[in-house]
Image (tube, rainbow, N blue to C red; front, side, top):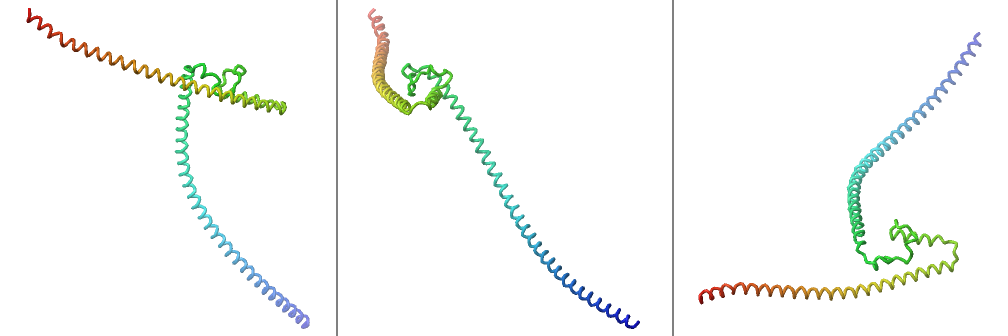
Length: 229
């Protein structure tokens, strides 16, 4: 019986020792875990502080950017309104120029309406609803569509364009010479008209002075006749 008790006591002592060792190990693990937890908390707190600082910095920058964007938006709005006003003015001027050009076109001479310094072509091949620039663009497009033509024909077309250029250049030279001659004739005619007007005004002034002197001398002649009578 004593042997059994002694065995039981020895087993209990071993169990106590094992439990004490286990408690010691668990305490060490707990200390390690607490240290890891404390380090993790400190790391998270540091990260949180950095994030808060970055958030505050980003918020301040965002506020500055919003204020700057509002200012730029105001400037852009003002500039866009000014641009719209300028475009409206340009549009109005363009409409006025179109009206004036249409009015001036009625007074163009036959020589001035020919070709309009554009390459020589037949307007009858294009509808009359197009403007001169649009007709020229269409004719150039038609000439570009001939991709199946040979290189020689294309070169010939280029030579034709060059010939048209010199024809237009010569026509412009002739027009300039004619305009110069017309200018000289108009200047001479203007001088002649000025001379006629000057002579007319001088004659009118002379007639007026003669009429005034005659009117003034008439009463003296009348009084002398009455005295003699």
